[in-house]
Image (cartoon, rainbow, N blue to C red; front, top):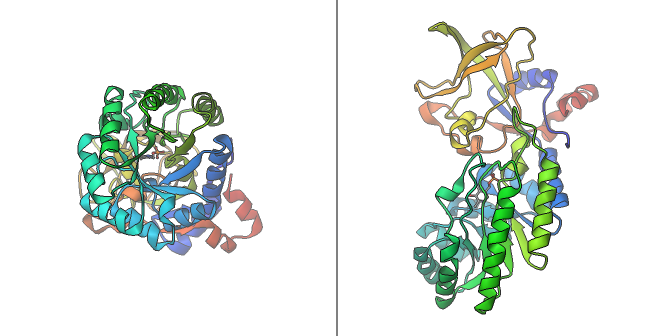
Length: 388
Ligand SMILES: *Cc1c(COP(=O)(O)O)cnc(C)c1O
């Protein structure tokens, strides 16, 4: 496995001293490593970074320089990327149910690639973006995914040909199919199921005179997770083999989110309160469920807490800084004993964390600094210790 970005204890202490806590540290080098790894394992595949996983400007600019394209889902994302100089042909508006404002923004910025999964969307697109290139999103069931998006999105395969015909009748450019197996999918099986379904639909469509030219295999590529050893190179190799087997002559797109940004951020948070409640140890942190730890709810994510302490492990409850009783991140989480003001490092904090954080109760979003811009603060030996 490639090395992933994790700060050393010295770096954590120095950064907390210089910038305060809570603090998110982003490594643009890790973003590059992740992008390049995916490009290497999925050769020839056009990568559209799913901006929703982390819209940070340094991430978007770093990827833009590497030649990435982008999956956007709202007028806000389209406007932000357009303001950064990203050309419209590098974006796909990949939200199967689009808003009026989103369609208007796509039209005036020149974004002309869309996904859909229903009849009602066809009329909307034909009116707002006539002749637009559209991909029909197919539903693929994947009970093994951490986040199953197929309950909300995707047309049933039995309905696909009817929807393609309708889109063609309304003057849209029927370009292909797409799917999303669900997020943090830890086996390639769901991709194979989806590839087989799409191959059959491509052939049936060809028999009806369609010339489908694009297959978008979505996102969901896993990142290293706690308590799980995932053979990521193995999974990516299998996916690539499947794509080559079923679609050797088709233009392939993918929409990676977490894979690109998940390992690229570390959080430094501080213990701001300790107490015993009902014979359970409680620790209050200065970042919480409404902040960076929002991934606990939105992404069902388990975080690793690095306390830099040795000694026995005790079960503890970790709560965030707000006054809401929902603001509890972990219960019965095993940890070393902590004290007021202790610093905790949380690695692999890049996806669906600050992206979905709120400023509820007046707590500002945790600031993000870029490691490569601040590492000059450290001498060479400390720098080496920081990327493990
Ligand atoms: C969320 C999303 C993605 C990214 O999923 P990851 O699990 O972060 O890779 C890609 N495509 C679509 C349409 C999405 O909604």
